[in-house]
Length: 556
Image (cartoon, rainbow, N blue to C red):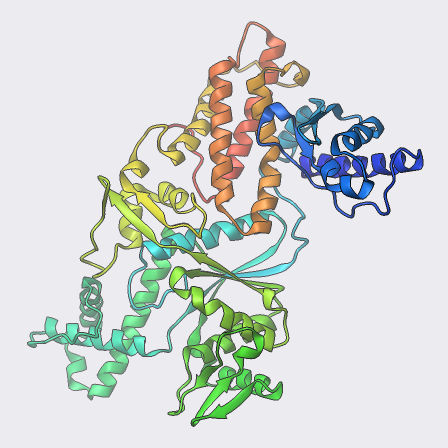
């Protein structure tokens, strides 16, 4: 079954253009030394220019030694495609195509036939992809920066799964570094303070009130018994309790946010065996050497700006050593693509990790890194101050509770990941067309209202869709047809924000249709056709919102 009708038509258009060139050459009307391997066709920005356009004549003009417009005329003359109603030449030689409307009616039937599966594709061909995201140190609550990365990773995974990839979502737990001991020390000091000791907190500890909450939990579990144990044992117990408490907090926050992982990978599993294995692999390949009592990775051989220390002179591994071992483990699990979603502060780390992947013998582009820029929270047009509970940032939980899960997910994904994002909390709570998530969800609720008021014995069964000729109807049908293509393009580009842009455009098209075309009219044939269109629109809104992990409300 065809799952993407627009893509099918696009391919037929490209094939038709190739056939037109070959026919013109065969008739002696055109001289070409070779035919193009790929023909570019695209949807014009202005709908007045038709359904599709190509710059083929401009691309081939010099090779054909012919003016672009003249070449365009020859191509149009030779073109034989039943679904093309009109082909006209514009500007210096662009060819614009207007399709017959039959394909739009066929696509409505496809939507109502596929239902929840409309938009699912075979584009990824089952390629195994791992997306690693969030991966925040379990030393404090998740904040708004983590929130944006979490939504980007989760929705990208949903998109790629829908496009036909075999996706695994992973959280890498940094639970083996010095930061864990600091968390344990911070908790132990707050534990002693809560039990009456006069404590002066050092500068390097975690100062948020959440540490006091963990310490209170430690008291509930152990009472004052830790004070009777040796200091080393106190710290060990405190560290492990704080770690598990913080990890549970992170897992709960993500679950509430609609984000579940297929696997949680502990850094502890890498020490020391996997790190030693990774170093041995690279040493055998000749990319490891010793200097100044340290062990170095020859990263410059793979495009990095300098070689990197992986084992320090005191024998301790660097962060890079653990990351080497972790990525070797990923590669050995058989993923064709590794996609890491990182914060903006990790941008400089990309070349060395690509160097590591290449040094292990894989294409460096096996690793893809999506860098997510910072989020600034605004209330009343002013930057929101830091959170008392977290100590230096506003938490994921605080934002979600204020604006709601749906609004938070939608807003975090509205902009390209490489652009800084100002999150307007007031706008996210506003119940008006100005609020983009409300605007989209209201379209779905409006459709439900329409269908709920239809007389019980009235049905769209057997509707003659050819009566749908109004401009607003055509615009809506085209947007519905574009959905599978948007899924494909978003998956291929790894840019999930395109789906929110599409959702907004679809809502605009539906609201325009609703304001211009009464669904139930005195003409039963037209009413049945419009009802068929409305049901198809509801299905696509549902599928889009599901892709974004957002509810599709029946009323608002």
